[in-house]
Image 1 (cartoon, rainbow, N blue to C red):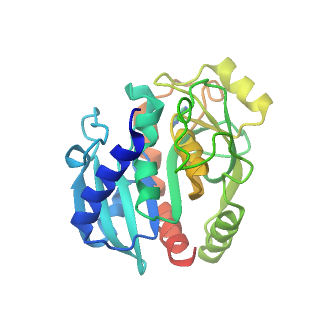
Image 2 (image 1 turned 135 degrees about the vertical axis):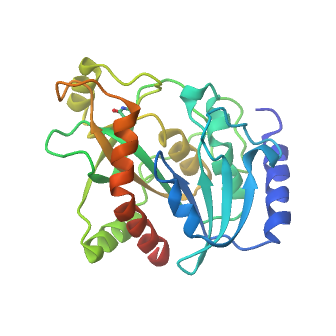
Length: 274
Ligand code: HPA
């Protein structure tokens, strides 16, 4: 993307004008079926993606596609209701543009959530997984090409991309609430097809517990610009080939609906404490 800093500054200025320079502490990206949490934000400033200079334009019908900014659990948060996926046809740099805008806005903590296929056979649909690491064999990387030194280093560390301290907060708050959570590795697939059974067996051999089509580009961009990040996956279905049944998006949405109460409670507790 040419003139990335200029584009980021334009987006930042537009948002700051609407929020009157509000100091925003945390960014939230809510995955499939989990967008309702944004409705709990008090006195929100709502900004449609299509109005923000240089923001990618949403392609999916029914995706809210807006920022909801305001107070949640005593903290100012910016919530992305709807995210950009690589499978929709966006380039990787477009997928992560909002994350870089969050950095420009001075946001200090990021929570990314997603719906994922469960590779780990010892778990069930509905399981919440704290992401401890990821695997990406898809060659595209959002940081490919010209490096903006103002944002981050050309070659940057990924060994703390899933912030150990935020993971500890998440573990503690889950325990306090009595919400069982697992921890594991998320493997990124480009989609939009679900994986084949052979791909899922391969993912398991490689060390994956979950598979999905989002989050990883955003985590890479967050690591690049030094935004401390927590990722939480909701296992919405057993991954392909584990059960003798075809996969569909309906199942993904239904499980999302079933656990969204717990998921929201956990995220709210983390926002309060991290
Ligand atoms: N695979 C990839 N992405 C997903 C899945 C899956 O099985 N379920 C929800 N998102």
